[in-house]
Image (cartoon, rainbow, N blue to C red):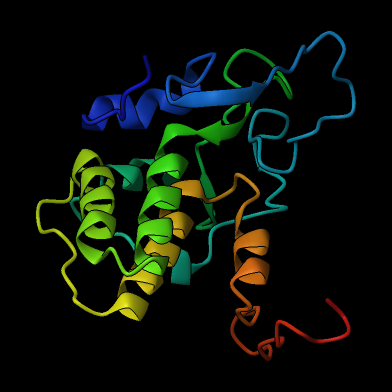
Length: 193
């Protein structure tokens, strides 16, 4: 059965393995048939200067504790742009499988559901299990339901970045859409959304 990866090396290498060892469901990409590049904006393989269609914000990078194994999912290009290493196209252009559901998300769903039901100890247990597996040694502690849910949302952002979940998380929680520096936040119920 699936288990959470709990070493720095395993967490670092998870997205280089096919299938991802934490995947419950994964979209298999066949490089022979994949000519348009479903993930080419993330993939550095096609252009040594990178396309930088999608890059991590400093705000996202600041959410990680220095001990967090997931820091290894990011690096900086020689020109200073940060980018994700989750999609490295290691075996050819545009060939990364796309995990649709991974085991860590199940822990986050469990934590959120327990918090919503005021089962705060169980929520914290699920959250701690994931965070511990990612190298964090100081568990998040709170007796406030909203604080726990806020931490679950931050943890979803840390764990599931560049996997297509954030927009839906913000919408389903009726949270405003934050924009980059200099832009205004878009209210969750704005007509543009």
